[in-house]
Image (cartoon, rainbow, N blue to C red):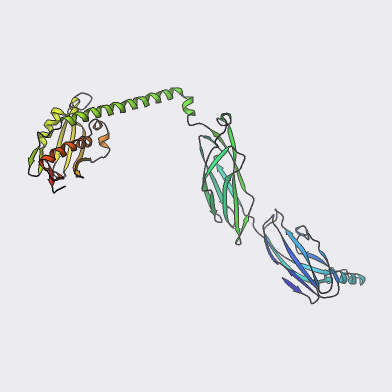
Length: 422
């Protein structure tokens, strides 16, 4: 801002300022003298005196047609309230003041030879609140929540990290976030121990840590850093195996259960291998009838074979029911020993035969059922899979130059149909 009186020009870099409590700003003042050599005193009116200072001094001696520069510093105390202030920067002539004093004039305003308006807006200080929940946690890794809230009229950008010097490490989700005015946000924090700590520094020892929320505020299109907000927490490391170490009986029971489970799986695998191998050796084509380009197998023949040669006959009778309407095959088991239902079917599996890549496949309605008890002892899909090599060998003599095209149920009969050429 430039103020001219004809004798002196007074120029301010920024006549209007915005400052937060605790902030300060310096600007240059240019004073040009177009009159006789004189000494000028710079004074700021309308502001608290303790807010104003002239680091380079406020008295300038200037010759004619010369100029000088002073430095004005405004410093707003941290406890200042938000307000707007309007004052003046004045330049008083020492020569005129001396002349007035000789005449008995005591009013210093009459010595003012130039002035400029100076405005200051003390802004509302931004405020970020943070709360850590819980304050203390125990475990291998502990999840905390940091609740942030922007309680200021400005938009904020917050960066989160752990203060250095702690034995803890943390993962923030998210680590960088934007907080509009009045908005709140919850941040998930997972805290654990840094690697390489001695045992005596880990187990059972409470570790203190500090979460540092560093805000940056967007104030009138200018990003301003402010002091961080710090929340303290406590974390006690506990090994994942600590619970079992404290309960040896439970560990023994779990070990026994694991051993029993593995033994059961080995037994099932051994039985499955034996049953499938036996079923594979018992498969023949004595009951299959060749009709043109198809093989025909009656449902009654299937059931007779199962009753006579199925490995499952040791503990249950196996029956097959064919359904032409939905082209489904239903396999049922009826117990032969008291631990199973001996009057009704205690297990039923449904599926269909399909042809894929010149191979016959059994697809269960429930894909996981063939791997469940009791079907895992003799899975139908594995039985059909083992049938394919024999089926291809048989077809190489009966249907030479053709490929398996379709599996179809008609009445109580299964038809496997070969067509075309390989």
